[in-house]
Figure 1 (cartoon, helix red, strand yellow):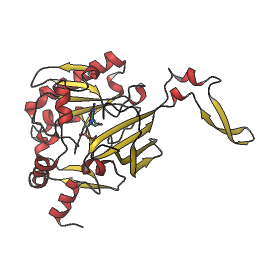
Figure 2 (spheres, helix red, strand yellow):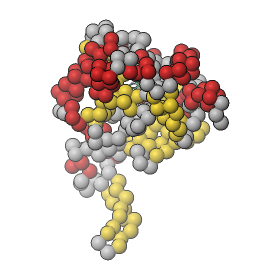
Figure 3 (cartoon, helix red, strand yellow):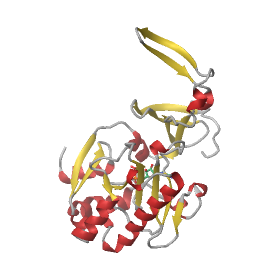
Figure 4 (tube, protein in one colour):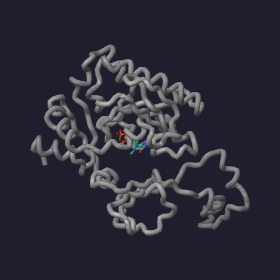
Length: 297
Ligand code: M7G
């Protein structure tokens, strides 16, 4: 789909989700003459001070909705080049993508180390999302020109680049992801003392690279890992503290600084021993495994 120049030929099957707060809509459909399902995420983009002056001209027409005393409301139609939407296309999309992007209720679950061994680990080995996109980044087969920083060390090195969720148009919703070069670290659960050099390297060099490139100080960054992640190759999220992206809350985000501290100062096997809270969507396949294993409804 990298060569698409329009959405001509996209046949909508279903609106999977829409969110008035983040102003996006997620569509399931198919492209004419192409096999497989597609997921399209359309999102209104944030304002930026840089482009604002272009809006504040006679080119922006106003259509009045109502007027009451000193209050009035208008629909504003800016020049079309400033009303672009961000579009993310996943094609061919698997049923896991359709589930991931569908509107569903959320549920909490507590994963003990025994649950991890018996339920989660076999699931990861059989069923998890393909991480080909991660290998493409590490092997310079995709997104090469988007790399912000790289440390090539095979053990402590990583690639830092903008997350697919960030259009890089404004710093307010800055979102980068650091992907470690080393293969085989599936998630938070695998981390122990031997990974401290990697974790500290990602933290300090990631902060430094973001400060250099974007001028955002490290105390304005939220630096964390997800548990459960969607993709089981270790990576770290860097997001702007002024912005609450999906998955930055409790039951999902673990601050990297806390992870380091827990391993270094509390117990080197902290994450092998800890019961970890996980937030799942109702349709999540791993959640369903837990339900049947624990024989709850
Ligand atoms: P996660 O915690 O495994 O899953 O994070 P989540 O999607 O449930 O948060 C993976 C991160 O990688 C997310 O923030 C994704 O937005 C991001 N991501 C996913 N893909 C498929 C890509 C991609 O192809 N390129 C880039 N740059 N980021 C991606």
